[in-house]
Structures are given as C-alpha cells and as structure tokens.
Image (tube, rainbow, N blue to C red):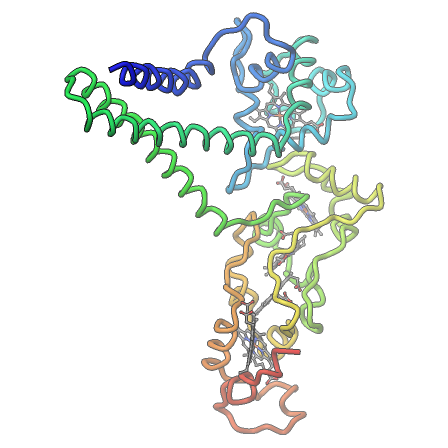
Length: 360
Ligand code: HEC
Ligand code: HEC
Ligand code: HEC
Ligand code: HEC
Ligand code: HEC
Ligand code: HEC
C-alpha cells in the first residue's frame, strides 16, 4: 500500500514539473534585468501607452525557409555590436534611408528602452538558442514516456477507481504531448530537403533578371566558353550599386554590405549550392554553347526565385537520361569541324555514356 502512495506522489510531482514549464513563461517579474526588458520590447510587450509593431514581426529570431528581407536579429547584432547606445539611438532619432524611415516611423524609444533593446540583441546567441531547446524537449519527452508507463502499470495493478481514472487522464495528456512533439520534429526534418543556404548578401535573381532584365551572362560570363559558370566578383556589383544605394525590399541594409566588403577588401563568401563530386567532369560551354541548352533545363526557374536552390538531382542517372533522350546538334560549327554528318544521333550514341567522358 505504502509503495503505491509514493508512486502516486511521484506522478503528481512529474505532472507538476510538466505544467510548471508552461506556467513559468507567463509569470510576471518586476525585477527584470535589462536583457529581459529589451526582450519584452523586441517581442511586442510594449510599454503602456505606446503602440507600434513588435520588432520581431520583421526581425526574425529564428531561421526561416522563406525570404525575409528585414535583417534577422543576428544580423542586427553584427551591425550594432560596435555601436554605442548613442549610435543606436540616433538611428531612430535621426534616421536615414527611405525604407528604414517608413518601417520604423511609428516607433518611439526613449534612452532606457534603447539600452534594453541593445543589451537584448547583443545577448542572443544563435547556437545556444537551438541546442538548449532540443535538450529541453528531450527531457520533456522522457518525462511523458515515463508517465505513460507508470500510469499503465497502476491501471493494471490497482482496483481503485479514482486512481485509475486519474492515471487515464495522465496517459491521454502525455500521449497528446508526445504525438504533438513528434509531429513537429518530423515536419521540421523534411525542411532540409528544400534547404537553400543563407547567403551573406540577400541577392535575388528575381529582382535582377526578371525585374531589371539582366542576362545571365552579364554576371556568369564564362558560362559560354568555359567549364565553369563562376559567381561574379563583388566589384561587378558596383557597376550599378555605386548609384543604386537602396533596394525596395531590404533598404540600405543589404546593399551596404557590398560596400563594406569592397572597402575591407574582403571576398563575399557565397555558399556554394550546386556541387558535383571531384571525380566528375562537367562542362558548361559544352551544354550551353554547343548543345544550345537553356539554363532553365538544369537550374529551373532561376529568374523567378529570390533564393537560389538546387532543382535537379545532379545524379549520374540524371545526366545519362538526358544524354539518351537528346540528339547532338550536328549543325553547329563544332561538329562541322569533326565532319560528322549523321542527323539522328543521341548524345549517348555519340559517346555521352562513356565512363571516361564524365569521369577523370
Ligand atoms: C515593419 C518591419 C519592421 C519593424 C516592425 C521593425 N523593423 Fe527594424 N528594419 C526593418 C528593415 C526592412 C530594415 C532594413 C532597412 C534599412 O536598414 O535600410 C530594418 C533595419 C533595422 C536596423 C538596422 C539599422 C542599420 O544600422 O542599418 C535596426 C537597428 C532596427 N531595424 C531595429 C529595429 C527595432 C529595435 C525594432 C522594434 C522596436 C524594429 N527595427 C522594428 C524592418 C522593421
Ligand atoms: C547580377 C548578377 C547575376 C545575374 C544577372 C545572374 N546571376 Fe546567378 N548568381 C549571382 C550571384 C551573386 C550568385 C551567388 C548567390 C546565390 O546563390 O544566390 C548566383 C548564383 C547562381 C546559381 C547557383 C550557383 C551555385 O552556388 O550553385 C545559379 C544556378 C545561377 N546563379 C544561375 C543564373 C541564371 C540561370 C541566370 C539567368 C537567368 C543568372 N544566374 C543571372 C549573380 C547573378
Ligand atoms: C546592372 C545593374 C546591377 C548589377 C550589376 C547588380 N545589381 Fe543589384 N540591383 C540593381 C537594381 C536596379 C536593383 C533594384 C533596386 C530597387 O529595389 O529599386 C538592385 C537591387 C539589389 C539589392 C536589394 C534588393 C531589394 O529590393 O532590397 C541587393 C541586395 C542587390 N541588388 C545585390 C546585388 C549584388 C550582390 C550584386 C553583384 C553580384 C548586384 N546586386 C549587381 C542593379 C544591379
Ligand atoms: C546540362 C545542365 C546545365 C545547364 C544547361 C546549365 N548548368 Fe549550370 N550547372 C550545372 C551543373 C551540373 C553544375 C554543378 C557543376 C559542378 O559542381 O562542377 C552547375 C553549376 C552552375 C553554377 C555554379 C558555379 C559553377 O560553375 O559551378 C552556376 C553559376 C551556373 N551553373 C549557372 C548556369 C547558367 C547561367 C546557365 C545558362 C547559361 C547554366 N548554368 C546552364 C548544370 C547545368
Ligand atoms: C538536359 C540535358 C542534359 C543533361 C541534364 C546533361 N547533359 Fe551532358 N550533354 C547534353 C547534350 C545535348 C550534349 C551534347 C553536346 C554536343 O552537341 O556535343 C551533352 C554532352 C556532354 C558531354 C560530352 C560528350 C561527348 O561525347 O563529348 C559530357 C562529358 C557531358 N555532357 C557530361 C554531363 C554530365 C556530367 C552531366 C550531369 C552532371 C550532364 N552532362 C547532364 C545534354 C545534357
Ligand atoms: C553523363 C555523365 C556520366 C557518365 C557517362 C558516367 N557517369 Fe558515373 N557519375 C556521374 C555523376 C554526375 C556522378 C555523381 C553522382 C552523385 O554525386 O550522386 C557519378 C558517380 C559515379 C560513381 C560514384 C557513385 C556514387 O554514388 O558516388 C561511380 C562509381 C561511377 N559514377 C561510375 C561510372 C561508370 C563505371 C561509368 C561508365 C559505365 C559512368 N560512371 C559513366 C556521371 C556520369
């Protein structure tokens, strides 16, 4: 009998811990430190008598899949880390940039609020935010599993109606929590499939190619006559961005980076998206110039995307399938040189399936 009683108290304790997590988040605390005060303003618990959009509505504190033109909190951190409180205050009291003024016009922050916000922004640690959370989730998952096992055990062993119904309720609650968490984790996992790496500058093909009618070759100028398409050097961006200093979506923030990289003599470290293994030979000019293929055949609808991603699998099967189905273009100058005159030869017939053509 005694052992059941302690078991019962044990379970009540577990349930208490379980729900105290949820309650602690909403607990009022009059003795908040600067960081917490800043966090509250940033997240929209604005000071009484003031109303404006929470910073978090535009400035993300978590990674997203869709493009967010406003700088994330981590980018703000980078930008303001060497600013004094006064510098940050004057960004609001004496703002520059059309978009910045437009989006922050209803925000009024006093000296203290600026100090709080700054200390919050500087305190956020990207790696910390993620690891602490998953650790926490793991503990909660473990708790609910134990809770379920113990409850089942009690229901099987005990006749007491009240105890039994109590245990049934806890099983339902714990299972609901478990399946909800597992569902969230599972749907997050799939995201890596569409993962397009964050780039150091939010460069958009849609804005440059579709809206401003630039040719792909304007920037990827080696694509016609060499193996690689190459990513343009930041100097090329200056052709326009010495004049165009502000974008409609990101204001000065992203274009400022171009000038920062140039003045600091740094390369923009673009994250590579398409990448074949070293043992594969692929040549752009063979496909673009000689075969006359459009970029979209392999890269998809680049001109309509803000964020670049890999559309094709780049697998061996993908290369060979196309070689089997396409004919070589024997009418261009390249093949006249080699005196090939049969018309209906697929790339594969022509040698496009030979291991040595694609492998070093
Ligand atoms: C409606 C969207 C929106 C809201 C709300 C918003 N911002 Fe911004 N913010 C932006 C955008 C977009 C930029 C980039 C524009 C630019 O710098 O020209 C920006 C830029 C900034 C910058 C960078 C300035 C620099 O040095 O270039 C700071 C700092 C900033 N915001 C702070 C805040 C704070 C603090 C709040 C909340 C009190 C806030 N923002 C609310 C959209 C927003
Ligand atoms: C104004 C210059 C510019 C123009 C015009 C341009 N690009 Fe790009 N392109 C870039 C930059 C910068 C990057 C690297 C950043 C990124 O991945 O978004 C890039 C990246 C890419 C990538 C991904 C490279 C990788 O890492 O695997 C592809 C594919 C691409 N461009 C294709 C195209 C195509 C197709 C067009 C024409 C429809 C085009 N680009 C027009 C500048 C340009
Ligand atoms: C041939 C001219 C030209 C070149 C070259 C060029 N851009 Fe642009 N870029 C523009 C124009 C035009 C806009 C649109 C400005 C606007 O929104 O009104 C723009 C907008 C942008 C924006 C802001 C988008 C927005 O709406 O907020 C960024 C960021 C940008 N470009 C980055 C780059 C980078 C990085 C390069 C070099 C790889 C580059 N651009 C090369 C003409 C150019
Ligand atoms: C037949 C398919 C195919 C076509 C057509 C094609 N590409 Fe590519 N592209 C690739 C492959 C495959 C890679 C990866 C190459 C590697 O990793 O060596 C790539 C890589 C790139 C890159 C990354 C930098 C590099 O050279 O590795 C850019 C930029 C690019 N392509 C732009 C273009 C542009 C612009 C066009 C049209 C003018 C185009 N591509 C046409 C298949 C193609
Ligand atoms: C969308 C169709 C398409 C895809 C995808 C494609 N190719 Fe090709 N490839 C062609 C065509 C068409 C030719 C013939 C060019 C010509 O006329 O000589 C060709 C020719 C070649 C050649 C020269 C063959 C020879 O006989 O000299 C090599 C090597 C090659 N491709 C490698 C690759 C590799 C590696 C990949 C995958 C990463 C790939 N290709 C993907 C269409 C494609
Ligand atoms: C049209 C181009 C092409 C031809 C022809 C080709 N391969 Fe490949 N092969 C590739 C590409 C692209 C990859 C890389 C695939 C990847 O990264 O998943 C690859 C990968 C491989 C791999 C590594 C497997 C792996 O999963 O990484 C081997 C082994 C291989 N090929 C053998 C061959 C042999 C043997 C032949 C001749 C019968 C051949 N290949 C013909 C394009 C080709």
